[in-house]
Length: 337
Ligand code: ADP
Ligand code: MG
Image 1 (cartoon, rainbow, N blue to C red):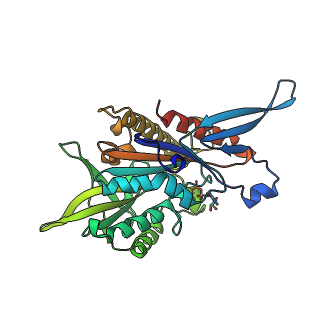
Image 2 (image 1 turned 30 degrees about the vertical axis):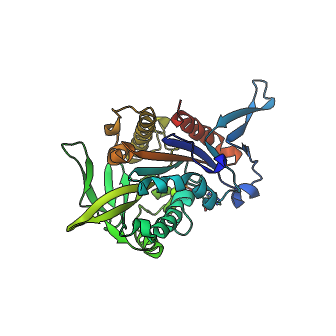
Image 3 (image 1 turned 90 degrees about the vertical axis):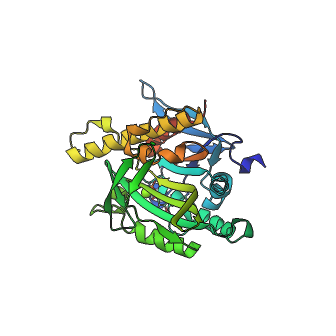
């Protein structure tokens, strides 16, 4: 069934997920402007002519997968994430990103504590580790947050970490906490612990955490002789990106310096990400990793034997139309050409 597998041969899968209307959107009687079909999504934008007569402009996009508001995380997992788990058991690296405006469903998709893709992958991983074929393989978790240009360890009291680029160009995050997990329950507890350390301020969890990128990574290791660290087979990263609505170019005078800096860093990292993914797909050897901290720390997830899946998340309602179109245009440019 081709509908349930990632695009064959390709290193990148680009998909879109539409979330359901929220209760408050329903109570404001907002209209649902997004229609989904097989691999297709269409946005019906309300517009006005110069004489103020209304009309609807239709924007159509095609992606590897389009998930409707009725599709759950389990379906998303089966369709686009299980190939990533295959990849890491096969000695490669894999990355899954959620990209979209704040409130569009990134965290629900990636890092919902009980049903996010990270835990569905964990179920799959631990089931395999139990089989004789993969006997002895161990799983280790790292969980960190990137805010402005800094890396914070969510599994070690938000300790600020240093990124080192070694002579062989390998990039490492020095002294990051690596926590062994032996079961789905372990993974869940470690996640819950780290998630409490996410950037949360007085203005509410979502608005604050939406300014940082969160990276939860599951590494598979094979114990190798007396080496206590073991030999990494593959790693799978789940990345809940910062909200893409904070454009640096908005020139909003009410934004303070820090907010503008946040916007510009987020923009820079999302642009670098797009360029790195495209370079990866075109098999280019020189990829613009150094353009942002985000792409630098993910460098070895992109090179060599790797797979990548981007899930662009969109809200269905009319007042988010501009943000939705921005998200879809970005995802469209990430697609292979
Ligand atoms: P983001 O992380 O992009 O800011 P969230 O994941 O926090 O957005 O989603 C915003 C709200 O919408 C949350 O209450 C979440 O539970 C809900 N939501 C998002 N996507 C879905 C979905 N596919 N199905 C049901 N509820 C969803
Ligand atoms: Mg979120």
